[in-house]
Amino acid sequence: MKSFHGQKSRLAIVGNVGATNVGDSLRRAALALEYEVLFFDCHDAWRGSRILRSLSWRFNDKRPLRLEDFVDSVLARCGEARPETVITTGTAPLTAAALQALRRPGIVCLNYSTDDPWNPAQTASWFLDALPFYDLILTTRRANVRDFQRVGCGNVQYLPFGYDDVLFGDSGGPTQREAHDVLFVGGADDERVAFILEFMAAGPAVTLVGDYWKTGRQTRRFALGHRTPDDVRILTAAAKVNLCLVRRANRDGHVMRSFEIAALGGCMLAEDTAEHREIFGPDGEAVVYFRSAREAAERARVLLANPAERARLSAVVRARISRGAHTYRDRLISILEAATRIRGPRSEICQSARR
Image (cartoon, rainbow, N blue to C red; front, side, top):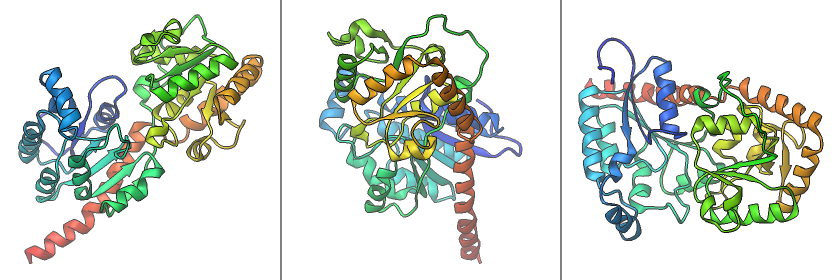
């Protein structure tokens, strides 16, 4: 870790490390922008016995086992390093009291909300109680804006996902020799399993990448299991059709894969949502949309039979996203610009108070 000396701006990020986690993507972007970065891995708040973690999740309001220790570490290290801004991602393990303590000396605290805090599978009152104490909430789903406002968040903005150009940019790395007809990358949620089975009953087989597909009797023979980001990059770029599903339980309008597929020039068959149309334009311009599994299967068959159309869509969607300032570096710049706007009035208030 870099030492906190010199004139560089200081930034703290609270997020998950590794794979395609947004917190780690923001960390890479911050280092590329030459920020001094203090990173807190949220996994540290959950370290301990698997049984105890499960019990805490089920019976203690989904409270991390080491929440207090994690909070103490964040406060202590931020107290020493004095970052100007703290960015947390998702359901970050910071309490209302911790956020108040961080903001007291003038640190601007922002949450990049990458999950739906009101999804019944995720919601936790200790986290909801903390939300109003952020200076700004940036949410990846428009469906959550009013929810945040209802719990007392005074400053809420929509900021979509992006893509990590280190993981999903044009790396010039190895390419896949075999192109799968239809590829889906994501976990085997119940709603996704139902969709995939209906899709394959009416259309082509789907190659499945992600957790839990191998445990299902009807899906295991199509599953490749969990793969590294580099494997996913290669598979996505090579696939003839990339299926993009949102999580309805999360009220998603788009997902991380929306940008990852597009950045790699994947021919995309995407769920028809207002956010997808806002990002990619009307049907057939850069992507092809569907509203049901049966319609998706029909449109996949048409695409598989038309290589020229697939090539056109791939080129258009890649150009649209790669030229549109959608990397996590771009997202970080937007977040830090928002922090600067917040910091200005706050500095004026502090100066007035000193007089």
